[in-house]
Length: 125
Image (cartoon, rainbow, N blue to C red; front, side, top):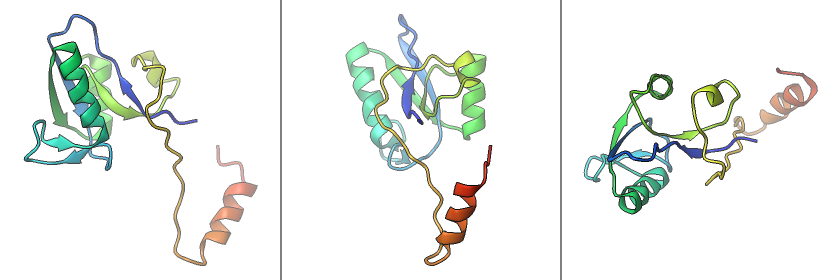
């Protein structure tokens, strides 16, 4: 099961740096918005900012770079990351998911039957 979770605030921080990418409806570039983003994740971050009395800075990075920044410690928070054992070595996942995502493939009408047959009859791992 994929967990789309908000990741990691170190207690005692007065500010937190968020490295994230665009993924509507969770993170949408909105230049007029406080953090330059809007969306579900940003709403949650703003509530955390208020309740924890911290200053949160949100910046856009490609996903791989955002993960690298969390691993290196140059970012404090990343949002919307699916759990993997490899990532769990450097990410502290919040145990409760705020959203579950079930990714699927989409095809043009009348072409999905072949793809469905291949994916269900073949071990793709």
